[in-house]
Image 1: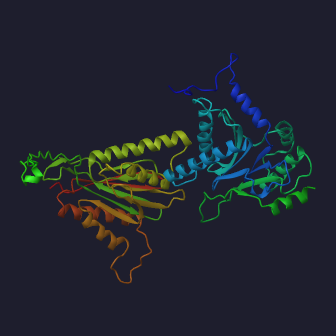
Image 2 (image 1 turned 180 degrees about the vertical axis):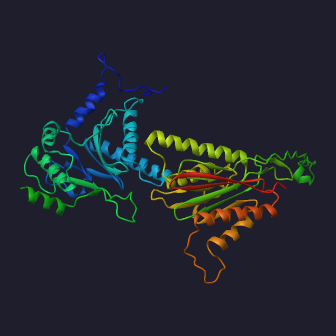
Image 3 (image 1 turned 30 degrees about the vertical axis):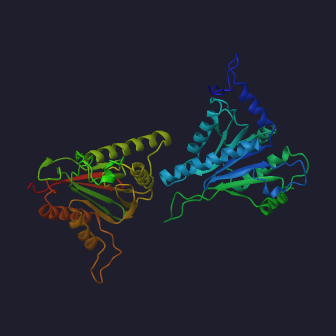
Length: 244
Length: 235
């Protein structure tokens, strides 16, 4: 009766799920995104490459705030990203509705990864063609997670996804150290994107998002952290001018 | 042919109505209170369980429970519903620990309790809980709920058969209500709170037939949950 009650993602004889492999290829075609976890915060950055100068770059949304303490960026298919952003935002608010707190990053990651896994095992659907980088601050401090189309998730100190991920990760391995402050991490993230950038990188062609921990102040709420925010074009321009 | 429909001829045979009178709810009475201090909280419940009439179901049936090393809950209303609700909360707390690797914070637990109650909006738990605990900074917080989950963070509250006797007494002694010129900012000390609870219950026991037998007091401070038991009059 149900023509598509069977999953389209099926095992090949050598134990692989080819649909997921193809989804990863779609991710590999997407613009590069990087993420770095600093000692006092997390930064995520992505290329906003457009094919034409006629596109209104300011209205492109490659970076999304999921809740006050968590932000998300992607490589791969934009429309699939939007669906996951909505799911993540709903999940975060549902959590807030129950616990009056923002979800810890690892909890939201598991939820989202579960959604992505569902689409590898449900009838009539295909896997999401995105890898996600989630950045957030919670009771364990700064967090950076990657979630893949299969539903696998990885905690990272620093990573890159998308077209230029291999070179970018090599670059990060050399540049990253655990004591980095958020400021330095932002510079490093922008430099990493610059490495693989074709043409001139301007404040219009990248998106940068940060979230920082706020040290506990005497007499104040110890669980405070700043909100996830996108850097304005003016701020990105400042960073770029200091690099050039 | 003229109509013989009953509503047109103005007569209908009497219909026999069987009123079975089964109510799923029973009020086991008894009384609970909660008091909030600066760095501690206190909840207290008597242990008498009645059946709404003149009989006693049990003299020593606890109504207040420890939920974690930082939180306690006191219940009044239907003992069966209260038991189920407390077990529900314990399960939710455990689920959270397994998922998060740490205990639920006190405000989170307060919200979960509210949700649990509202989930049964159309067949409510006949329970009026008082939930109390320390927040992340060690400050005390007491929450009272109605049967469908309305949550209120308060300095003190009393529920149950002697609530009308205790609430104004606590208002006067803790909030200094109707005391002209009194210092309304001071919170009770631990010793004061315990004395208030004991005095409140011994007085209530005298006047309320459903309150008595034993009093169980739970105090939560930075070291954990401490339980005190006091005997009340058995008559």
